[in-house]
Every structure is written in C-alpha cells, then in structure tokens.
Image (tube, rainbow, N blue to C red; front, top):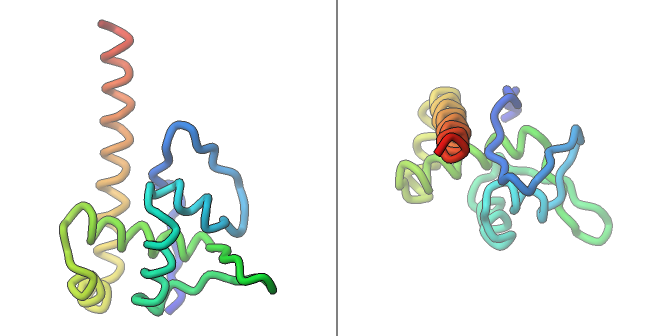
Length: 123
C-alpha cells in the first residue's frame, strides 16, 4: 500500500535538524521518534507496510512514506496505548483517519511545547 503523506508534521527533538532528504537512516529515524533502532527493526517485521530501502551492507533507509507509517504506529502504540495487534487492526480498518489523528496530536504537542517555551521566557 502506497500512502501519500503530508510532511508538515514530524515530531522532532530540538537537537535534530530536519533536512530535505529522500531517505533517512535508521539512526535519524530513531532520533525523530525517540525510539531505539531495535524497535524500528521490529516494527518493520510486524508491519509489512514499512519497507525501508537497504544498501548492500544491509543499512536501512526510510522514505517519507515509511516515516509517516512509523509516526502513525508510534501514535497508536505509544499515545493511544494500542497493542501491536490493535494497531495493525486499526490501520487495516481506517489508515487515513488514524494517520490524520497522529498528525493532529503531534502538531498540538509541538504548539504546546512552543507555548511552554514562551511562558518560560516571560517568567
């Protein structure tokens, strides 16, 4: 399944500088989501929609579509508390709705962080 994504949302730590790239290494993707690389490798096995490219050495490189899928899985499992099977079922039922929810929640979290920074500076 090929998913078109809106890349206006991406939860990034302050220390991570998002670059316009076609592919992101497993280390960069790990940093984006604050997940260990082993979790991303496990999710790749569990969710057949995640298909990173691999070089001859076997290093994984995730496309923006892969990142969107990981973002949605992260939202379902870490924010909503779904099990992996529950996340699989939710993605099968209505992927676009869950992806939109993940995007909205993350955008709101980024706005909250920005507002908290402003508040701290004003204090």
